[in-house]
Amino acid sequence: MSDQPETDADQILADARSLLAEHERQQDEACRAELEAVLAKYGRKLVVTQPQITIVPT
Image (cartoon, rainbow, N blue to C red; front, top):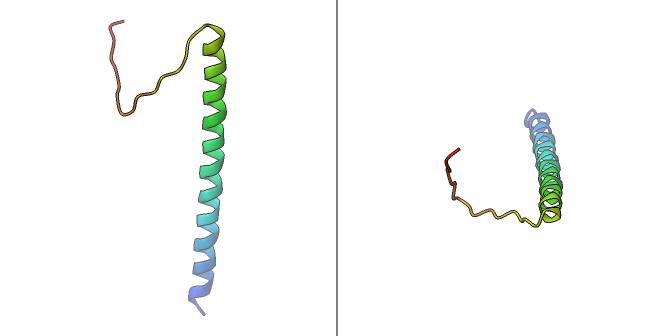
């Protein structure tokens, strides 16, 4: 029975992490949608080609 509180705490922590991850995913999607809307206004679009990173001259 001494393992029960630890198991409950582990489950609560796992649930909290899951909720946080979902919240962050929703924020990421909202941010991306906002960026895409602004870019579309100016005739542009967002292109993400992972894992490519391009460094260009300044």
